[in-house]
Structure formats: structure tokens, C-alpha cells
Length: 106
Image (tube, rainbow, N blue to C red; front, top):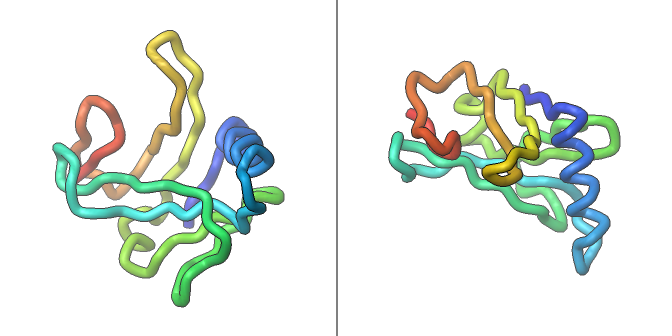
């Protein structure tokens, strides 16, 4: 379904160890919005929701809701550290266009 690079797995692991309560994993979903039509949403959650796909990358669990699954199929998520800032990047084969910040696609 999706792939997290080693850098992304380490970033999620680091966030999970710093979280106040022990999260079960990372929830990734797509919502309408952003400058290109859809935007990526991510956050640590205590448990998956009903119908979520559960993808395991090493010891990191990723939860994806049923609506977002076809929009994220085949996506590679990376974590990049650059002078302009650090953050997650998405290589989504389903995106026909994207905004310049890389957080929105159509």
C-alpha cells in the first residue's frame, strides 16, 4: 500500500518516543483542501479506527482510512532535512499535479 523510507520510520519513531501518551501508530489520511485539491494529514493516534488498513514498516504501524486508501496506494513517504526546513515528503503515483510545497495534490 504505502512505504516509509528509513528516514521517515526514524522520524515517526522519534515522535512516538516523545509523545505524552504511548501512541499505537501514525494515522495518514487525505482530505479535500489545499491548493491542488487534496491535502495530506498525519498524526499520532492511540488506536486505529474501524476499517483502517494497517501497514507495518519495521516497528512503526501506519493506519489509513478506507477513503484515503486508493488515493495513497503506492505512495512513498520520506523525511527530509534541508536548509529550508525539515518535514515529510510524499511521492504519490496517483497525483496528477501537486502544489509547490508538496503537501497538496490533485
